[in-house]
Image 1 (cartoon, rainbow, N blue to C red):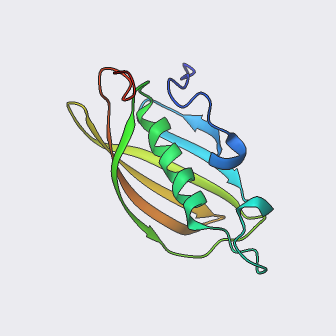
Image 2: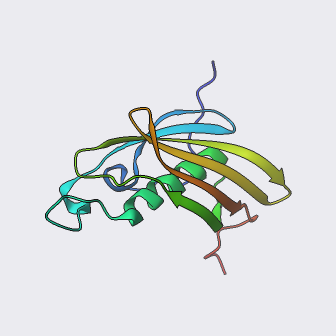
Length: 131
């Protein structure tokens, strides 16, 4: 099996957005342990933005293009998560049309799906900040 090398998001912090467990040309699996810095209250509820960022990163890795950017997302938060939870995100590229990519992302805590999203991404020929 040929090892796939990530071509995007090289400077991302894996403590905030997850670390790659496995990846292929149109699929990836990443993991994240939720930390105290992500909590919003004394119950240790984790802010949904961290889960969204985790899922977004999984979508970017599934596409694995150096200039990939998020255009839009339709997401559903299904269960709350808390500090200490270990999450796995699985992202699958389901559609490709020229520069547009659609990725389905599922986030699990153990066997339980806690987040589901469809991410519409684009792969421009050069970096979006390269004017």
